[in-house]
Length: 204
Image (cartoon, rainbow, N blue to C red):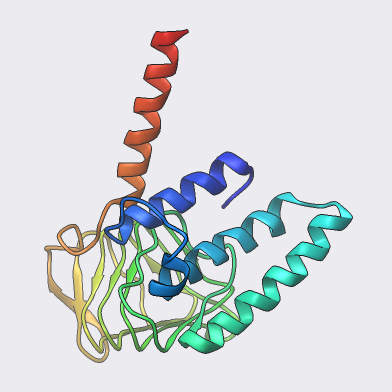
C-alpha cells in the first residue's frame, strides 16, 4: 500500500518497468491509455492514503471522477489499494477486480479476467501472479506466490505456490509456475533505488 510520496514514486516506477517501459513522457497520456490509467490509479491511492487536508480531499474527488471516466472508457474495473507494485496490464478491456481482493507485487493480468467475491469474501493472492485471458478467480481463497492461471481457467479453491492452474474447475497442470510469464518490475525498481542510495552514500 502507498503510505508516502516515496512509495508513490516507487509504485509508478515498478509499474512502468513491469510493462516494458523505461520512461514516461507527456505524449504517452494519449498514445498509451492503459499506462495512463495505471498512473492515475496510483495517484488516487496516494491522495486517498496520504492527503487528509481539505485540498487533498477535494482533489481526490476530482481524481476519482477522472479515474471513473477512464475506467469506463477502457473497460477496466480496478479499485484502489488492491494491487502491489509492478502491476502489468498488457491490454485494456473487461478486467474486473473486487475491492476486497488483496494481490501482491508483479501481478500480470490479461483481458476478460475477473477476481471476484463470493459471500462477501474475495481472494488473497501472493506475488508474481499471472492470469491468462478469460481466467476467473473468486471467493475467500488463498493463492500462493508464483502462480500462473491458464486461459479460461476458473479457480474457487486455495492454490499452493509455484504451480500452473488450468481447466474448469481449476486444477494443477504443471509445477512451472509463473516466473517465466511475469516481469519483475518490483525487483528492477528496487535495484535502481539501491543503486541511487549507494551513489548518494559514496558522495556523502
